[in-house]
Length: 344
View (cartoon, rainbow, N blue to C red):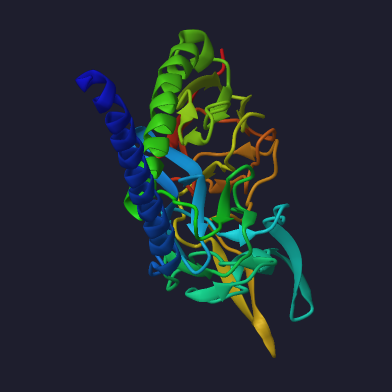
């Protein structure tokens, strides 16, 4: 009897409890949606590039993919020579420009100069942050005013350096700014870890007696993901007078380099004033070529290849014995030496 009478009661209590839990869950769910809809806009940070020990550099945005709500602010912190360009195809870095009637190689104005101010509302279309030249803040922000969807951006300087912002509806819960910063740090750490492993393998292959006497030098690393090892492999080579050295930026590289002496730092551009127009940012001494590939170099003579992009090579002949240091002007710490012995 007792068992018979209590079972319906227990079932009824269980149903009431489940209903109550359902009401509570529904209320919590509704509250979460309300909170998401009523929350103040948040500010998310994206790191643009990073550098580390061993002259390693990450050419990536981190986090590479970010979710935001409409109205949120996104801030990019520039840790290198990068721009933020909302487009699908990169612009050429160097173009010929008219500077008061003279054609000069210049940095592309579509890359150099911003088309939108930092802190502006971004409602879509082709916009560019400009480059962090001297006097320009490395911090760039945009308030996102976009319909839900996926929007891509890139760095024009470094092909393949791209990021994605996904705008979601207000009822979608997204990672917090703190969580996304941790995600970005993790991405950088994984990339650098793989690069350090690659560096050991590259050194084992290029720091051999045969490689050192080959007259062949690789500029930076290839096939190391979004990390580049800004070193010469090998950093020293030994040849005979009258022989040549060839520097090659490998096909799988993601970064331009150059070979020069003496070092010229911080003069990437030389502004040329043009009446009624923005200045022409002519290629400066840091990047300008002084030497043609194949030229002969004498002791004490200045030389510079100019920019050497992935897949390109540059050669010089050393006619006299001596010690010839060289550097990459755009990557401090990327140095090497050619040792020229007397011809047999």
